[in-house]
Length: 409
Length: 195
Image 1 (cartoon, chains in turn brown, cyan):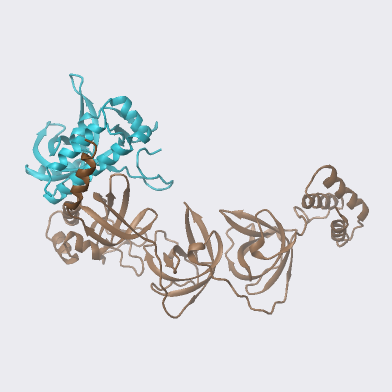
Image 2 (cartoon, each protein chain N blue to C red):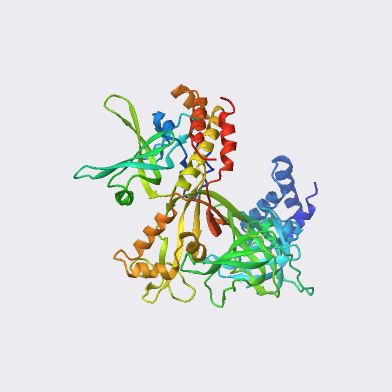
């Protein structure tokens, strides 16, 4: 194994700080570490460099290893020291004072998150420019690779003329990391958190994924039904479910429509439980909030609201004897299933001493024990029902069952 | 582990115990009950003679009788009849909604019941099964008939699978009843249905 190149690199680093470096001595040390002690070459380089740095009291090398091979972004793997060139396509807010900058780096092969440590003393990166990162480290968090720029990393701006051509990933093929997709906003959900500006479902021909957009200055909602190309969104995984965060992304509205596959499924079973929050409900009127108000007309975000909007829904459980499925039915199907319109429900609540509880009890009498067949999309174990039928006795099944039961008598 | 044919439990999601479809005569034979896990809130099960654990039942039948009992701790007892026998259903002050539901019902009527089976020891040593009611609603004959088919099918499925599951093995050991006997029960129940 030839150590002269590594030794040369180390001695250059030392001399660049104004010290004398014995290249032959360095080479001998490297050889000894690698050949006699079985230390990996990159680790040996780090060890020798650190040793010299301590000897000359040079700071700023700590933790630095070999620069690693120059790679394109979709080739790097966890734990590697690499040299990469890429364009900063997004800068996101740094979540901690120990982080100077965070964002997304892209080249023509792909994109990944990067983090610049405050202690790296790196120049401030600008969005839209290309940089070369020498001796950066790749690590992994929640299945997502990220490039760490530390004090041993050399960052230089590089001129780059050619435009970046981001590859679009089909939604079905997404994995944790950074990706570009083209999809249609097929559902918008009730915000479950104060800081969420918008969440919902975005889908293309291959499947759908939950998306979330956190509140941040200058961020705007996507319009439901709109088709967008999303450049450099962050895909992460929680509870085995992928989710796309749009805050790092550039979203570009597209013309036209696309066919979407939202992964619809169906379930048949008896309706065995009507959950609280079913029946006649009141929703927060604040623009875009739509949360369900408590009995005291209290919205978890906007507090007491006296000008609410009424709605009807069913929350409950279907059960086929071996499996259970939580279902959520919106107003249209609810009115049809229960045989009560929103206006009728309001009238009932207004003219009855039990108020909205009376509607709940009517719902319970109308639904409990009924065999239903529902279709819809399942998200986090709950089916958002788009169609539902009440099932009836089918005498033709009887003959088959009698044969099965009598077969071995 | 969730036994029998129950679906997989996924971390982070609430798991609801499925309601088994059991004819009255099979439920009456059940006397083994056990708890899965050490936690106070761990689910309890009874072991059905056809070889599946059961934490909850769903049934549809005819409410033939209801009785209010107790003064301080008022509760309702009700009898619900299916083609094979009688279910004993009760609702106490811990099931206020179910109690109000029973209070409004006038027997005889078809009802659908969701509830949890419990095993009691009678003074003479016999095991009694009663169903603690979660909900009881008036339904029509169409639903009762669907339930008989549903329960016939579920019982046949359990019999067919009982040789291949740990719960099936245990039921065979504990009850010493030939599961095929329940095949006859199913046949007789189905024979009463209109084609």
